[in-house]
Length: 303
Image (cartoon, rainbow, N blue to C red; front, side):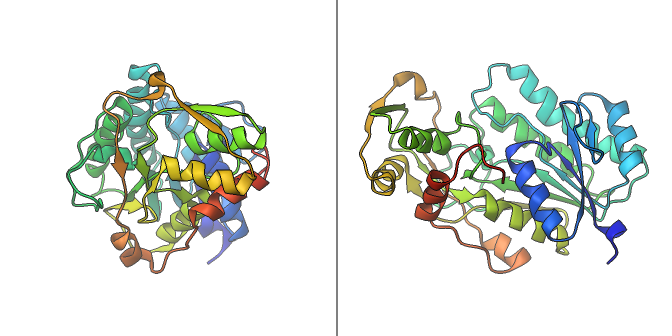
């Protein structure tokens, strides 16, 4: 396969996942182009707003990618502007898909990142893709609405929708939970304010996520919605216990009621059987490995 047939356009290319994915795909021999919101800093970057259909079409006509990975979104659940969440996550994706068709681009695969938040608080211990989504916040609602809209394009585009569960890694911003905790330990802070310590999440490493994205692009799968997860649940309190050992000192945890969300999703653990069926055995990152990697590497380091 020549380099022209390995051209990938990543939306949100300068974000946490986008940077990791761009590096991973480049190392695998792909030619990477990025769609970015801020002014482009290199020839392979193109500035465009998902709310601007004409610019999106112009970028697609210029790049003519063979693969598209749509990561650009508002991903911070308590984002203050609810309307903007829908404008970007739902209508921005609609604009992108329409621009692909309008530009006459015929990609081999379009991968759309949704979120496991769409499941809400399901009445099951382990969540597979057959569980009926029941979102409990605007972020999750916007992602589920996006999924429904995306499915109307499955007759015209080779689409894969992914539902990543929680994941983290070097370079993730500190307002996200795990980087916030690790940063407090790295600064040897005496205490940290958190929300509900009983919440349980399925944590993966961003290195897991980008490898899975590449393998989904290379797979025969299409018209699928699939979980991205480790299949293991970890309580927030356990994260603190492990960090006490990794950092060699204990930190006092104060529960701040302001950090306890209404409609808190208590448990979010995924079933990755379908993902394994689609791409084969999965890479494994234990929670201690994930935390140690974050603790030992500066959060400002390049992916």
